[in-house]
Length: 348
Image (cartoon, rainbow, N blue to C red; front, side):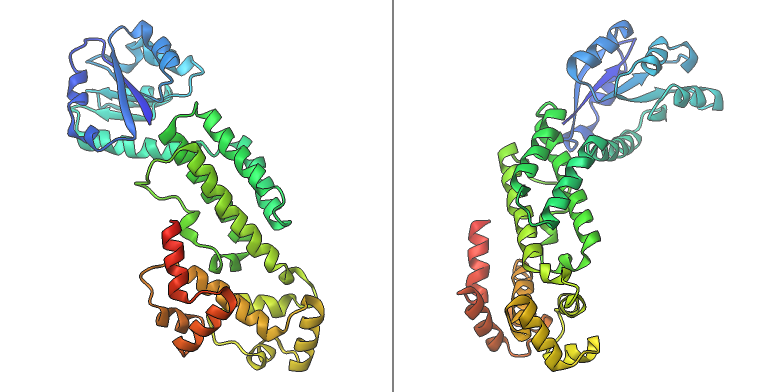
């Protein structure tokens, strides 16, 4: 939750902001207090870890408000919104030169206040995937690509670092960890675009209106999701084998199509016998078995979408016969597609 103070030197106008009905819905912001004595503002900001300050000009020109100059010269990481009756160029310019995030002209409207809150919220969200996090994020991505031996340790380190940076503030840390997770996902799929078909994107992308979670719950989700990515990449490291790279990549990229040894051989301009021989030699499994494994892995992801019917999923991955698809799925997983879906839903 982001903390706000209202600076009102007259002590008369802050209620106009506090009484707005927008605050009932803005659970991401909290008005901590109203400060009348402007000499105490900087101390209040420091003592309460304030993120945002509304300054009411109350008829004064911006150049005459000392606290605005002090805010400009301070090293405090806080966003300032000035509310003034003056709409002339000089006052607005003075406000922004002093470092104001926004300048709202009276009369005060809930629409303008809410608009400022929306924009500042976005600023805060993006801010917390900081530069010092980038090296840890890159380390996690690299480790996942190399087999994932240290994935759990690095995940814990990133989550712990974010909470430490944000003084263990739950909502803000939830947002920051979600943003960091999304950043990692973007890096992973940018490097290996085929991954999108084999991991559940909704587990990695930020969603507004989320359920507040504890640090332990977030770490467990990171561990589950990034260990899964590491397993997928490790399983398909065949794609990094120069001899069969184009063959294997064609299968994972076109997994949603009807694939056979013959259709793939035509697509990659290689002899069927050569593909069968080289694939078994390099991977230890037949090419047809590889195709089946890839399709079943893709089906597992599609089954996470409860809106999709089993017959629809079968068609999506190239099986015209849903019963045959279910039979193959059970041979590979020990469960029918329906049983697999039910088991996943129970775990969630």
